Image (spheres, rainbow, N blue to C red):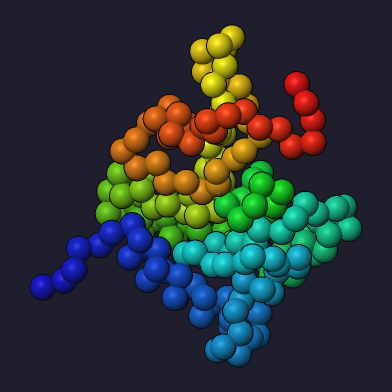
Length: 179
């Protein structure tokens, strides 16, 4: 009997195949991680056909280097906001367009909901899910920003409001300033 396919298993199985393809494309040995072939690769990983790096913000010269590298290997890349690594890091994602289409087509083969779950899982692994901790305020119903953030928090069945009130500091505190 075959095991049931889950989004996590689907991504893991696909990652193994695409990792081998990228090694061949970049001319790497079997033990060399292809995700670190990207210019400015930092906190990098691969999931499915996507090479992902979470560097600190890049400047114009580094973007040109990324463009040249992408063109050399027939890749497309995108840069988006806050990564799951640290609030100051960004997400750089590179992929061969035909491999992304192939990956998506296979996911859609399991159904629309499955494909959506795969996409959601990929997004959550790359981007920050920030929860702002607020302190109580008699003036504002939802509290006041405390300056504390909880990153990559899986809220599960709880609502954000429940988590925020649980994490709210008992006494207001300030770092280097007074109110």
